[in-house]
Image (cartoon, rainbow, N blue to C red; front, side, top):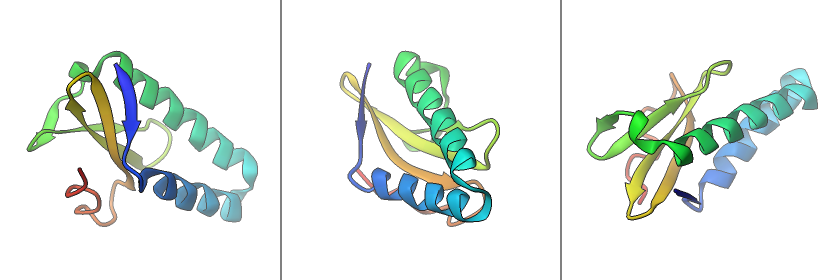
Length: 97
């Protein structure tokens, strides 16, 4: 399936990468981004393997970092709505379309 991103996902990712760059350097930020890209592709390749959590939203947890993203299936697309921390602002992004 094709990946599609809500317009605010880029700022979600940028904010997280800025944090990792500030606390640990660009290497850790790059590792976060690489893992995120891996799971974006995994969601695109087999979206049905991730169960529906609430309404029609599916959640993908990263392995190494305490972040996840939410997506929904829209026709032939995987639409990523938000990338967020596991423990902060659980309502962030759930109303994005």
